Length: 209
Image (cartoon, rainbow, N blue to C red; front, top):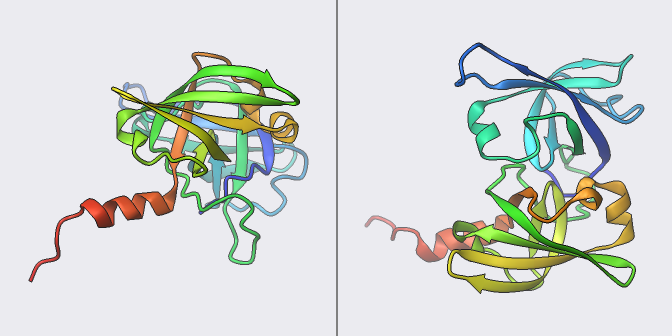
């Protein structure tokens, strides 16, 4: 479990195939900030751009760690198949503050950036969400974008989904990878966990007698 509050900026420095066939996944090597791995053990969970991964190896000298990612996960996420910057968040501890909202680290779908423009001192980030996620997005509701907990400012329904916008303050732009987004870029989306359960309760099958 996570909160959507990024705790470090990392960089994927190597992507290696786990086998010769296209069905094999990849092994990622990520460079973390100084001392970021001090309290990380093999088997711990770290979210990469919002996708929960398991640490399989770590190197204190280089401050690098490795994760293995399946072909299925690669197909359902964005920004993890090549070298580049990634948002990092360690798994939530029971006694930690919930600074963002409850985040599972399971990407629900891939959206697309449609607008990235300055509004005063901030940035309006507008994105298109696929149809299967549109019903979970609500004005002033929560959404996770590339692992960052954000508040929805506007939702416009479309025939094949919806377009929604969030406001990025300077702190978020400086301390996450969202500051380098561009129009047309794919992004990882995770819907609000509470909305997921509400949808199940409202539309799920009636209990058996």
